[in-house]
Length: 439
Image 1 (cartoon, rainbow, N blue to C red):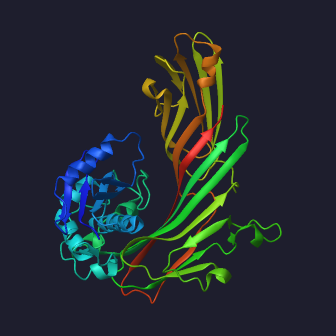
Image 2: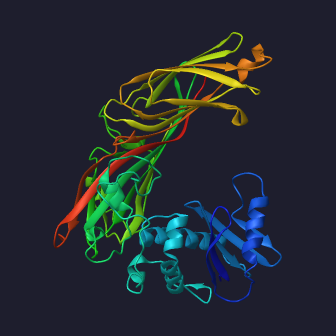
Image 3: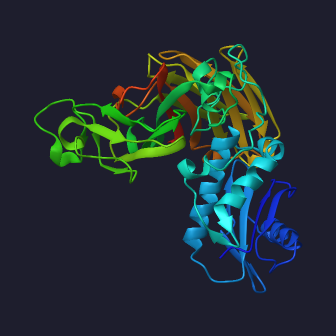
């Protein structure tokens, strides 16, 4: 059973505090934060103990979601509950941040009152909770089709701009009447995270793709939704036939509410989504990249009185514009200054001596384009051994409207047909999880 639940900001500010059983004092909040900040490294233990009090926490939206207990419950149950609490907060408040929690503290307390009774978890179902939650969410920023500065893709941390439906997807699931947020809409995202290792000669050495299909539903009534995937989708190598250019994944997992009676034959997923966000399918493809790597980098390093490194970057996807491209090049310890020559004015580069790295950033990279840069790094006491400290290069980027596996949504249908106009949005995005190029 749960004794306390509290939400803290990254600086330790008390945002939400709920004591269900009166077993522990409020000082336990400070005890937990001191324990977390005293640990070295970014990955703190999920479960920690102080005397006879146990703390279980997760990090979501830059916040600490913490449950304390004096009994010995299953940690996985508490972790699942905290993750579900964060997801519900995002659904009801529209976004997950310190600002949205502060502005909607009354709504979150009402959620906790319905979800937990005297430390015992009652429900985490959106369909049940929406019958009891009366407090309306306060949006941190009013939705406007003309203000696209904070456009984001629900279910993924992205900064893709000028996509109005993305803003609509970050609104609360329960909106006031008369607001634009009351429209019947459903959003489907196909999100892929790419991990790649490319050798010094440009040969692909390792690749891994982790993908998922997420939906966020704003429909007032539950309807069966049919999601049609590629007809030639194959699961594992055993299903490949002849020389067809089938879309293949090694394995996939489905949400427990997904019906698969038409999946084997027609590649159709059937689900009755509840209001809010959920992942209906997860898939993986290992040691094979169906397409060329999104970026090819041709680096060269020379030694003079300083280290001269030139970078030639090429985007292989001609149909998409990469966003927020960041290239990090490790440099020798003791580097003090850098001069640069960039091929376009929108690029930026800086030397970060504390991180022993050179950071090259490109906000927008058109598909099929080629960019170059020349860096001269001043290293006192330069030696041949210093060249060994240069590399490997790591990249981070975002590719909207693109999937590396080729997985596509053929159709998105609702049955029975919703009364009134219901809008359906399908979007694709590929993120770099780990993109490494050896020099």
